[in-house]
Length: 198
Image (cartoon, helix red, strand yellow):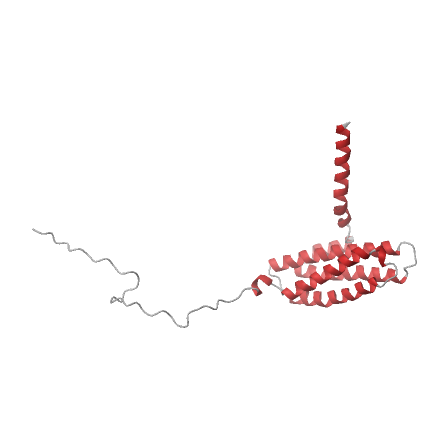
């Protein structure tokens, strides 16, 4: 009996552990997955993810117009959840682009522009009559969007920009050695006389 209970418990633990992973597998459609695979570098993937995120917010905003229809709240919740997963993937691509030293001026500029637009749409979703259906996911989306804006402020390569040049150099080079010898390096030991006493 104990063995059966243990097996059943382990089964349910495995199922509930796998559920978030399964939910995340389908946050991109097949066409989007192909576009990500075809992107040449991580910087281009950042731009693609921004486009995908925009589509999810457009879908959510459209559902607020027809909010009286059954299932509108759940549909907005799903779009926002996908939006959050897309932002996570975008952040991973941004970090990869930094590691690979990819040119990031265009992706970062676009991220800044679009993330500010995303925040405006998310604010509109907060004012929708059915916001209780997706409020937690919406708050998470706002926080993640702000995190991406904070990443923009760090610049393309934060670890390089954070370095400070040394400032404690001496005003002038050290004075020359007072040794009578013009030779560089440590003084030589004096040679002993090679002549032996007779």
